[in-house]
Length: 231
Image (cartoon, rainbow, N blue to C red; front, side):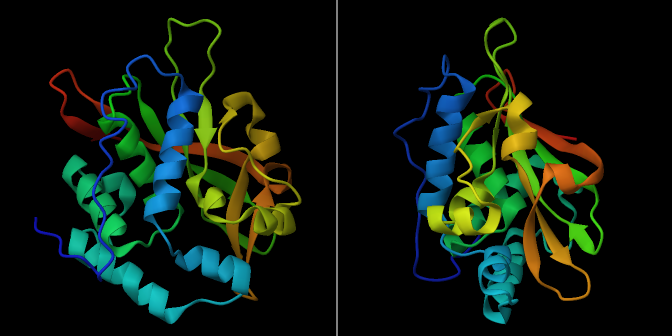
């Protein structure tokens, strides 16, 4: 599929890290992926609502146009093919826009295409908070299962799109770029929209009732070095 750019902003995939992650640890590739996302994406509909308290129609249109270019408009992520995944992430980079799931997919693709040999998992947060609808995605970066001292890491590229002052204002702290999986209750926050006011907040895990983490799918290169996204 030929995906034309949304505007004049053009990106090409960095070749600097390609093939360098064969022996990397999750925190190293996590830092690289978050920096990649934040240097290639400028706008987010959800961040606009979070920081300014409103839904930006212009950004919403750009987001829909991006999905139409990728051929994924209206298609649930858990039904994406590997080609859908690649088409969407390339379109998001060209349009320089994305919400949490889009940003996670860009980061995951960049990690596996840079040679990291272990799976990346796209996850969502489930549960209930009175008055809010939860809608957030993050990535789990799997470590080498043979390394008994290693831990899986989590990254949340959406949170890292916010400035440090914005993060401090919204959640009272600066989330680390990467953190080990056992620390998710301390550092992970869920994007949520209030059903009555239509405003957004970042909700800490401690406030979510019936909290659950749902796996959307895993991203990896198969033995033939072909990109895979399995549900």
